Length: 359
Image 1: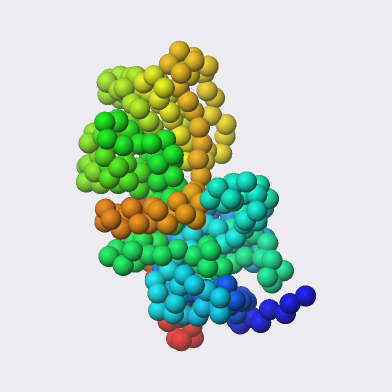
Image 2: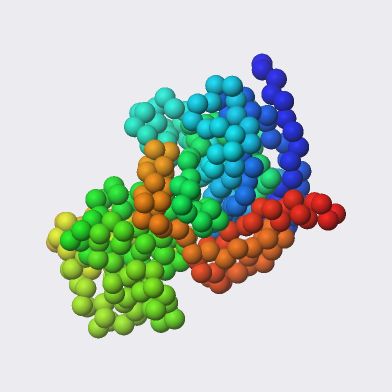
């Protein structure tokens, strides 16, 4: 068995579901021939980080170091790396490997790898025999095939959430061919929803945002929405009955999905990217009479994620962020639970190094 050299790096993680995140030391492998080592500059905070750190999905391996919205600078490359060189900007999203052999991997759909892709954190690490550790850390080492190029014209910190929230919304909008002449609904204006508005608008669609919060009406318009509908207002909802070509539902709480299915025109599709904990009952007659479709979607593959980053570079799209230091992560998780962020926390990872120096 090949011996992999490792080095110790500082990170922020948790030892148990009930424990706060705190500074820990983890091992990273030294770059193998096809690896890229990235100094992490910024890391977005996704709701999945919170779910995993607190074992709400019942599969967390501890210690857990979350983070899969990673932007940084290449500091070392393996001898066979051809796509990146030292000094390049680079990014890592939700995956760091896959089987690369199954039908889905061969179709650039690594997110649906038949054998299960290797997630950026909390997955088996085939190199070190432990679990993978994510972006709440000084650096990360990833095979070049799963490293992405970053458009240089964009704010690097605000690019970080594109690696999850951006691709999670871009992928279904692209797959269902959203474009000019279409009315597109976006349900929920949070970390995912605000990206969906920006991307759908850049694709040429007419965008209608559905929200329960009157306080978000003006913000939705600022982000690019053509119309904003308060979904608790029956009269406002009736105006769009049978009118929409496509709906992206980004709500992770329990809600009446039939209300939104009935806004679709003939052959319209509603795609769920939010992840409610409880099942959503679907009435047969919300679908059958108008040949409507109800589907789900997750992130995209590596090629599509690069396509999304290039698209955002071309259209100058980034996430709306609130920058935090790593020491504020537990407070950020509490605020995330309350929906108290517009629209994505991003960690300035320089704060991890500063804290270490001060200690």
